Amino acid sequence: MVASCSFSRCILSVLPLASSLLLLACVDSNARVEKKGSAAPFEKTSGQTVPKGSGAEVDAGAETKPSRETAFRETQPSGAHAPLDGTPGPGDDENASESTAKPTNERDDHEAPSFQGKAQPLSDDVREEMKGRSWTKACPVQLDELSLLTVSHWDMEGNVVLGELVVASDVADDLLLVFEKLFELEFPIERMRRISHYDGDDDRSMADNNTSAFNCRRVAGTNRWSEHSFGTAVDINPVMNPYVRGEHVAPPAGRQYLDRSDARPGMLVPGAAVRAFKDIGWGWGGDWRSLKDYQHFSRSGR
Ligand SMILES: [Zn+2]
Image: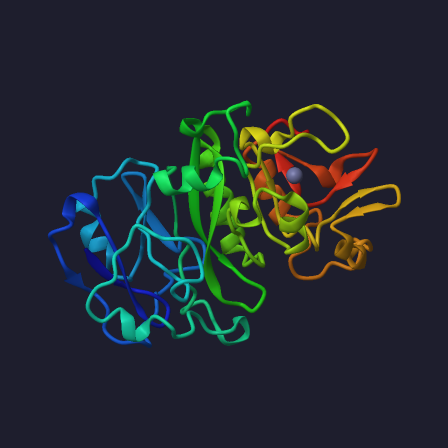
């Protein structure tokens, strides 16, 4: 286990092949990750993301996880999200409930945290949770073809928190790049929970402004599998970026965001956030003509 500095507290993560090594790198609860230039908040070593100045880089050589996985730190109050692969250790509990980051307007370049993200195979628990909710044997992909992404993102209050997405394994690396870019842009995402939390009900997930990816379902009103059924589509902040077809708006609360010229935080409009997806070759539902699906990005463009 390795203890590293979070933005205002200590957390732990497990490195499987270095589990016997305990390294306390956290000095105090006010320690912050130093950002060495806004363009290069971290460096990659053997495919891993290692935060500069956090102390985690001293263990980069001992890390032997698959290349897709990155050094990883919990950045959210405990219990707010699904289990991580970290195990609590000495000094962790007392800081677990502290706030995780300063509000955006109090930060500067020297205090900005680094993006953290990883992709891993679905655990047995996640598989069981998905069965009958977001996945069945009739679905066009198997559970072995999906991965769980865990990424840090900015929320609407200017905190850095963790989110989870189930995606097709063959797009996991590309999506890590996208969420790294969104993080650098400080593009706010209200929440990012696995669709199983909503029993696979996309209407409930959208109404909760939840950002999601894999969900085995048909395109509304058709027999065609949605791109989400393949894990190759992502919906971002659905309330702020609704699906609009004529008078139909989904979710209903998205009506207050129909004026796309009035760009507010979390809204996707042509610009850098949309470009982050286009840079990996994905299409955006905001470009469609017959209808608009502002929340929707997909590999196929559909
Ligand atoms: Zn979608």
